[in-house]
Length: 184
Image (cartoon, rainbow, N blue to C red):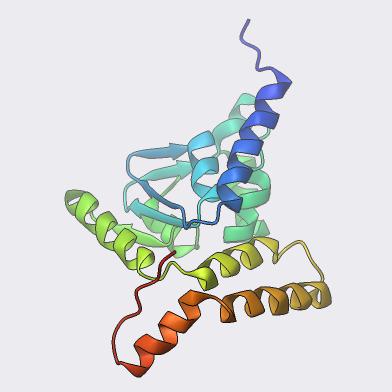
């Protein structure tokens, strides 16, 4: 009937939240278009890669609806003013502009897209450790807790990182003047 059941919105946000809270580093590589739910998916990932001509936006306002929790996630990356502009206008921006305002973390060339994405994935994969996991968890909490509570959580998670085999490997690698090889 052309209607979207209410349950769809709950399921969609639950899926994005699962991605955000994953212990793994999630990398989203975009070319072409990343609009609406595509951009919401990208915003739920940790690292965003795009080509300069990729089109990004939340056009839902042009349909008279709210662009989901893109309204929450977008402002955390690009600030409230820019998020209001993008959300309330429904206008797209290209990958270069998205990179300039902090929505995209890396720009890659279209003709070497796969190779550059692979290189970036390998770069992030080399640092996957208990410290990486705990850092991601803390970063996800950073907008939701007062300083004192956040600091206590940081101390708890730092103890976990310091006691991990990954930290021991990093210290051994430093002493041996080599790159660490993490098990995570």
